[in-house]
Length: 150
Image (cartoon, rainbow, N blue to C red; front, top):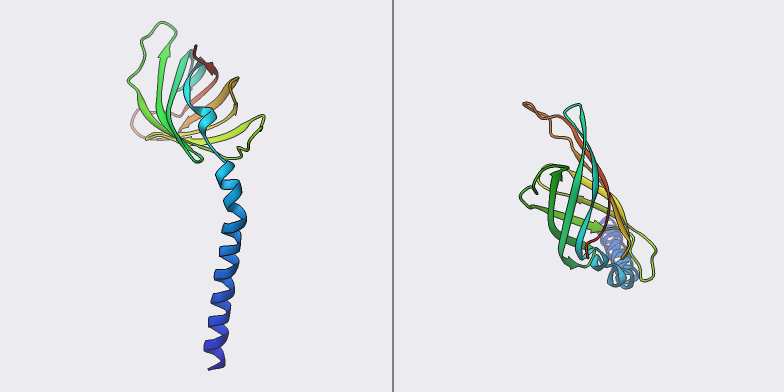
């Protein structure tokens, strides 16, 4: 009997602690938002792919922001090329609070991952890594400093 009550008390304590953490985290969660990412961001990009270096332009169009999550599309074009087809992208704002001077970003699409920093209304510095190995694909590393499109 004592063992059953001890397990019940431990489970109840764990539940109450978890509920307490949710209550404490709730105000911060409300303030956390990905809305500063909304809009079209365009900028020059440096690319290393398949052992070759090239430059071009990258474009992110963020259409939806809910809580810490933003989604939109990503496109690329080489210096003399045309825009690629839009590819879906999902991003997470990690440390946003009202009045923050920068927001850390993580994200992913169907082929790789994003990591970056947004200075709301000013710039979006982002790196991308496509680590899929296979066939003739090599690692793609893309880095750009984008500005809001006018």
